[in-house]
Image 1 (cartoon, rainbow, N blue to C red):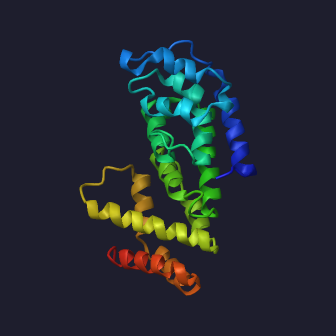
Image 2 (cartoon, rainbow, N blue to C red):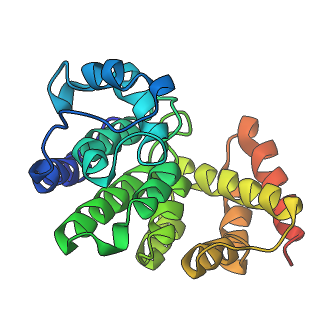
Length: 237
């Protein structure tokens, strides 16, 4: 999606906050990662102009096999921006993957202004995604990321439920179907309490009532999608 004013302001703040983490001059990585080539690609252009092709491979390897938390935080604002734009397919550039990366990098020990900047981007992106078309964005990964970081998502969930646009409703449809798929996989849920609360919300009566109301308003070519979600939702009861 194209960042709107609120999301763009949050991204700009992230660039300002993380600017103290300077551009790395070396990357600690095993030879097969070709750290010199990787670094050259990462530093060939200004941070805000880094392409998905240049930063994408690093996004998935960061901190586990390439570089440290300081290196990662230098590139993090651009990774957040690419995640918001949603057109970078490399591992580590999806919102939920980014959340897990920052947690791996010691997020809870980072300065408050850095944590606040990341949370603000996730919140703004989730809020904007609620009203975007299905082919542009989806709020669920941003909300899951927030929950994994321990941030409250209750106000965003209420905003999602209250949004009466078709796009907001269809996002809810897809989130319910995704939750049903996850539920069928089974196994013990090891998610953070906030993530478990989000999953329970998707299974709840308020969401089901929203889907039932959507069924009466959905265009004919979308009814099947809503009906499928209602069938999936019935299994939660």
